[in-house]
Length: 210
Image (tube, rainbow, N blue to C red):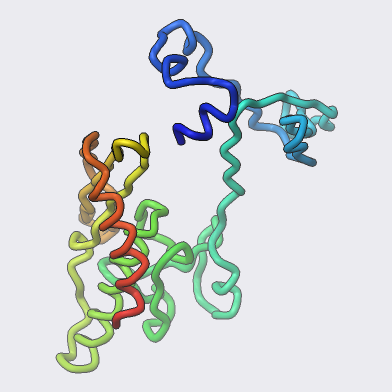
């Protein structure tokens, strides 16, 4: 991140002055992105004052762009005749990771509906392992309940490369009385970034060990 900030013509001092943050953000909720010119650093989009109005061509310049595509449930869900939500996720049964309408269909990752896990690699990996545990318990022990509060939700973001510093965001997973799992309170820490390296290695390696 520090290198990208410098490449854009800024330095870290720009992010330490309060006056640089007098205007935090503009929201263009009723817009559709048409194109992005990475050389000119311009975003082209159609913008309307209201959802029902016809959009007008508009542009906005940027220094650093963080492009996040509109996220929906994975299209794999369309292969199964199960209940889904409006977002496209497959609805899980309470306290379970299988479908509410077909207990033979197990769900994990960004295809999951009903439960509200944060969209992170850590959460997907943790829920995936719990799903495997649930399937094994169902076959070997005849029980299918799992403790979804064991799903870890941790995310790291590198701030400085030399010396290595990172922000860690850790959240608890809580279960409602209806059996819905979701992220609870969060804890944010800033410090030495070696944990970032270990976290990434575990996320990449663990799914391929089992």
